[in-house]
Length: 485
Image (tube, rainbow, N blue to C red):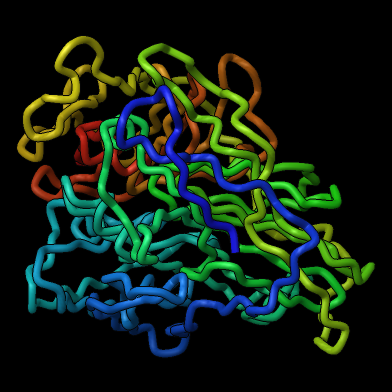
């Protein structure tokens, strides 16, 4: 188990350690990682989710009060066709309003599930989702303004797979839970009785919530058991704020095959992968040598403002910690033993000439009283904190726009609803290899130019959002909204 709770001296009362314990490779893991239940709707085009309260004994001590979809914590992996109209029935059995945003679906604003489309207690929302986009790993989560961070922390999130049924033809692992693993990465804190703790300090509100304990699929201290072959990892960063820098403990390569909204044309070999909140990546890892290994992460590097001074940007904060150990079981069928060449996907190659330009700045409040702002609006975009009644921009349907997005003081994962975009540049240079596929969320570390085409409509009454995906920043005002007309 990886769990420790310390107070960092000199950083103010109430600031909990955000450095996860470094990995101890000698320890023996005994609990096998379970996948989220699979809810396959590819045949009938319908699925139902019930937001409900539950209890979880994460550490085997006192139970935590949790929320989930169809279960006590988190939700099932919902699999739907990537080219179909899908009916979703979402029932809210909780005692407060929630919403369900389909993060990564390029669908109209009236079914996007943003903060204008909350579901009242005891009510059911039944949107028809017109899905027509490449196969991908996307996700769903609550998106209630001012409450998103707390509600996601309690468990209202899950994975959504868009399937075209062609993975066998591509030579990709596709046996759910055997060689095709869904991995929801989250960090949490627990009190002395083992209960999940979301009591925010001032630094938590400014920097975003960081936990001291690693959860994968809502489980602590588990091991993934895999066949002696190629294994597919569908990674989702479902954390509120933590940025992961992923690598294998024995330096075996990570083969990137998919980004936020689709497969690549061919694999890209990496030694490490940065995974920011809201992002998804698909990796292939080769276990054919039979050797066990662990997925590690570097400590969170998004330090920004701490201890009364500007530290800024990326800061080293300790040795790597263990995210998930892997143990090879030769008795499991290894369906795929060679890396595929042609994945059948694509990388964007849109022409930016003639695209309308916009500047987007992600702003953090500074100066005396910044923590005392009314309504929690400590953050803004282009100098304006989020206002449900204000449309920040209107864009033309079918038009292409180039946004130059600048992060202020620290790194911010930036998400745009209703589109998949191309990363043109990062800090004036070509995009990182991991950002050369189709994206809907990008970690802004300074400045990035993104190019997108608006093919789906969104009215002023049910607009799309664009925001930082550090959830405490989103709740604190670093969000805007736009119509597509």
